[in-house]
Amino acid sequence: MSVQDLLQQYQNTPRLFQLADRLSYASSQKIYLQNLQGSSSQFVVAAAFTHSACTQLNHLVILNDAEEAAYFHNTLENLTAALDIFYFPSSFKNRKNYQLLNSSHVMLRTEALTKIAAGGNKKMVVTYPEALFEKVVLPATLSSNIIHIKAGDSLNVEELLLKLLIMVSNELISYTSPDSLRSVVVFLIFIPLAMKSLTGLSFLETM
Image (cartoon, rainbow, N blue to C red):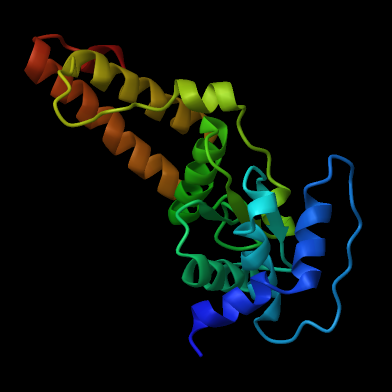
């Protein structure tokens, strides 16, 4: 029996139909599942996510810690092959120092927030309490700081570099860790030089 055959068995069980039906209710539901062993919890969530009664529902799955959430997310992706299942980790490298950012985790958080704010088809976010504890930007603020570029676009390089300069300037104000300062200072030096070479304007004297 393949993994997909096993998932199909979960999808066809009467209890899964009951679960999907209750999840579709407008009012809050308190549902407790017991005797789930091994990866059975991932199979149940994957079956509910792909059930016809839940086609318009977004799902938030909260695990105990980062390791459990990462494992759960990876298993769900393998079971469903869905593109709209996002891992939402904490931004920080460890719990002892909240000044050290994990850049890959920041990108994962931004991707999840951007996709959710864009709407469209149903999505699932897999996370844990430590990651949910952090504040997130407002959807309008996030959208205003996204630069959309696609093949064939005609770009105004001066405006693009100026917007990047504003973004990294805000980064310099927001984060004070040594790693952040070094990376932002490099950008602050590079962008004015690029703008000077393209437009003949001098920005270094004003910094």
